[in-house]
Amino acid sequence: MFTSTTLITASSTPLQPPDGQEPSAPPEWVMLIPAGDFSGRDGRGPYRLDADAVLAAYAKAGLDLPIDYDHQTLSADAKAGPVPAAGWIQELDVRDGALWGRVSWTPRASELITSREYRYISPVFRVSKTGSILSLEGAGLTHYPNLDLNPISNAKGDNNMDDLLEQLRYMLNLPLSATSDDVVAELRKIMDKLQQAETAAQSRQPDPTQWVPMSQHKVVADELARLQADIAAQRAEAAVTEAMRSGKLAPALKDWAMAYATRDPNGFAEWTDKAPVIVSSDTKPTAHSSSATDILTDEDRIACALLGMSEADFAAHKQTIIKE
Image (cartoon, rainbow, N blue to C red; front, side, top):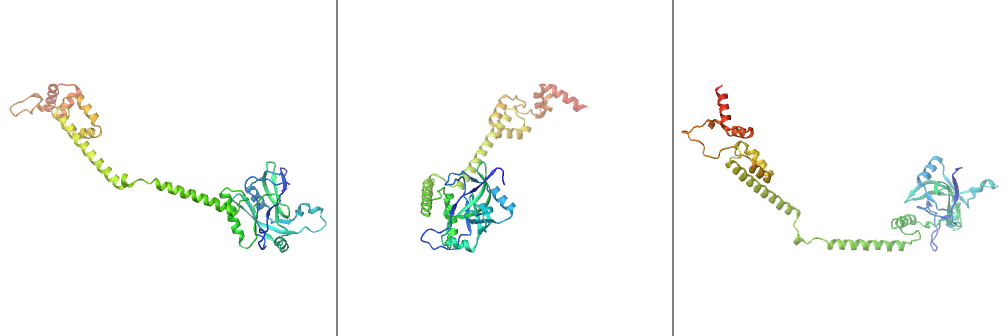
């Protein structure tokens, strides 16, 4: 016995087809525990299936679970005669949160069910103090349903349709009492909403006269970028040429100046304004003129400007080095 659990019986699940249909063999799969929170008509509950616990307990026991008549197994010790089984639960499965069982019915139980002498199956389960269903102990055929579960038809070929109807009720969030007509009506509502959404989406399609294809947009963007690069290069060339003409930039630094002026034209313009004149812009001396500074190169003059030396002093020092 589980010290923290209680044994519960709950009549449920009609096994007969609706009135007016010919009875056939009882269903192989029956719902034993519904999904979500539920209570019995007698007020017991609420309960909730702990599917992992129930499946683990069933696997650990390794036995088929009995389905008897009117829960006689629960009081078998007090009976003098046999307590026959109506069937055996040989497999459990969880479908959309509900517990289902695959039943192997006895010939006598099949006859009693198809002749409407028994219509409901009542699961027997153990629950914790908090209402969690921890194990399935079996079930019984009974006359008085306690749980409000969907009817399970046993007409030939109906089982799959009933399973589908049950899944649709769950997916559409409809009550367990919803009929097939209710399900169809809800599906039509959804189809109407989808049609309205599609119509609205089509009305929001862009006007082709106001837009251009992405491929054409890329061609235009690439051409614009190329033109902007050409213009930037031309402006940089003009700025560097002017800096060299004004004597603020040595020809040896042209490549550096071009990169700077192209990347940051404003920064290069600011540098040019503040740079000292390091290269004379006068006409170069002729062969008849001579000066001590004639031996200086443009690089030497840049060095003079950076070191703060006069070109004459630098030229004299350079003459000394050359003589040595």
